[in-house]
Length: 203
Ligand code: HEM
Image 1 (tube, rainbow, N blue to C red):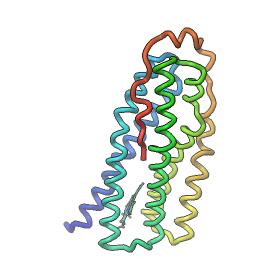
Image 2: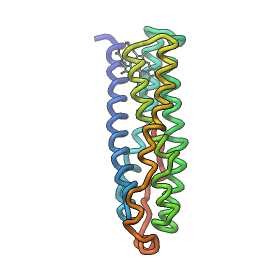
Image 3: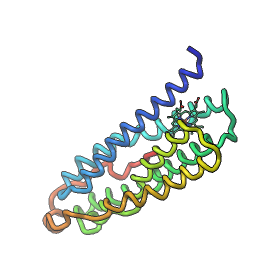
Image 4: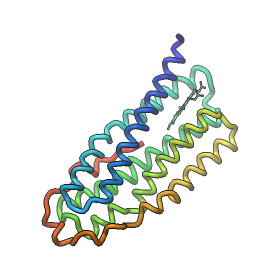
């Protein structure tokens, strides 16, 4: 067993952990989107908050192990490796940039006002949902280029397709089907905020 294989295993392990954490966070975000009371939102917000610390660790492990593999057997000018790094950087922008800032705004609103109209619209925020779904399409895209190792054109097209398809696939999540289920005034009085919604740092 050579060190390369061990590091490749670590690389794939980081990917598995990132995929599991993303699935949990996505499920919690779907439930949070349907929440009608602050305590309900708190429950799902807390789950998201407890999963979020996994992402920077998985991102750094993917980057570190990927750098070792590249240095050992490939070159930094390999198109699919460059595409992998661009994909990972975009995932970090989606997670710790867009999603985290929207999550913090939602957290603040729920803590201070409750399930207000603004909180409701933040639960369906197009930017946050586009970032969430684009993270998934980018992960798929990077997995595709890492496994098939295409040339420059194929690698670039894959990342562009992931960036275009992500926001398009997120459109159904922008709409609210349950806005009428509760009255803002009654919900505002119902209790605490979601706690950790705003601490997002997804890759
Ligand atoms: C979201 C981020 C990433 C994902 C989903 C990912 C996924 C994968 C997968 C599935 C493989 C296995 C491919 C195979 O064995 O044929 C792999 C291998 C590899 N990855 Fe990544 N990777 C990511 C980030 C990176 C980064 C940032 C780098 C470079 C700095 C990198 C460099 C490599 C290298 C050199 C291999 C070894 C390929 C081989 O020996 O066949 N990866 N990656």
